[in-house]
Length: 267
Image 1 (tube, helix red, strand yellow):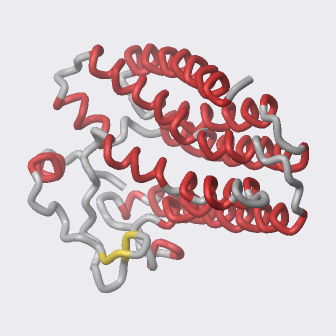
Image 2: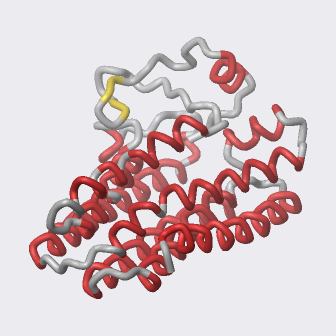
Image 3: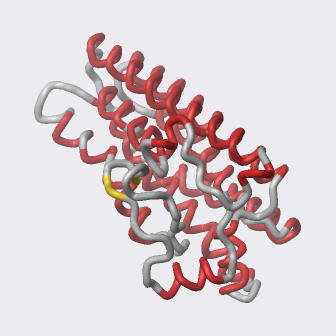
């Protein structure tokens, strides 16, 4: 299959998955399921791209394992939050802002299906790598272990913090959360460089095509996301957002202000 064929198949499967998710949120009034399905959709996409890819077997095998395990872990973690907690404040805001319009929710879920395709581009590139370079495969494994291990640790630390009723409405500043407002996001971003290492091949392919693929999906998805940004009252001197200093809580933006004023924020 050609690359457009593979990505087209990913889109069809992701769209069907998101239709099921849209129906689920309609029934349960909890749109957090979209995050679970996004992670699960990427796990599915990694296996599909590796299976249909034309590259060497070792990179494709590692692609299937790393993508599937990362996506499955994240989906399971997010499902725990959706199952045991109420709807996330960002989605409660959208439900209020959209006045419960299911047409808008349908479009939102289908947008996430499109993002699954967008984030699958690194998988397709890695699956097409015809070279087997043991050194770069080892680098890929090291990056995956460090990033997924760090993300799991950050998620566990935050879950323990949130489980304590005394911390309700407070900002987590324990463990990795002392050094970044979103250490889980940082490690998730780092994880995508696994596929850069898997895609390294002799010129003209390799770095020229694979390196940007780990970064531009994040940039694009941030640009098109309709969700209002969360604002935290974490001290800027102690907590950073990945590598930038923390913004002031509820900085003047009509969505962010309304979001905070209506009390939709929670840890």
